[in-house]
Length: 365
Image (cartoon, rainbow, N blue to C red):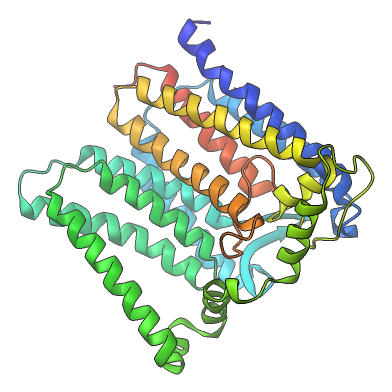
């Protein structure tokens, strides 16, 4: 194995630490609810499958994977349509297919297909004039809009944000006139301003446009600071009452309904103390910094855009989830990567990582 390949695999040190922390917490998850009785076994299976995915991907040549991105994109959009009719409804959202006790969330797979297609278009686009700029920008926005509308109907706010992050990374790598960025920012501010004007003055019209379910989700996000939810109150109490080492195995400090998923960070602090939080943050920091180093070593634009598309989502999930657990940001279904309980998100993270490591180790042309 070459030095460069060995260097890539140093990422697995902080990753394995995060996985172990996850498994220790899944051991205590059964004390939250009987629905988490098999959380430890399932999470272990997902981690094993994840590493198996990475291992297999390193044995095959996938440098031409992007040329199939359009067909993959169509496939994931079909899944997003089907889940609206055949999916399982949970907490007012129809985002999952359920089969034999396992759930699959198509919007997670859509992140991968969208990133691949936008990267393919961005890296191939030959921009010579204003017409070329307008054409590629409209194409990128349209391609992002389709899955965004479909997950809006579920509704899944977190997935829409992920899609927008991927779009933003693709646009940032485009060599376009700076006035486009000024236009985008102006339109964003105008749209946000319009939304808040309608929210505070014309709620009936806004409900008709957005739908009742999505409106009340937005309402909870906007008003999160006016009153803590039961989950957040217990999460903050857990963090505040925790010792350095926590309560340990087979105990929980306080009941948090979504503890193994959205509130993993607070749950881990309750179980294994402030020490657990420090290890999580330091592991993420080590992973992030080394991942950036590996990406920047690669000179291929296509690989960089794809890698940064994933890394931007990965970093967003870290910052948002931990901030949400601390009461600094509104509660939203944003899992903590490689830690929170959940098969689809975990496997998609491993799939993204496996593809990127494969591309980074090759002299991709």
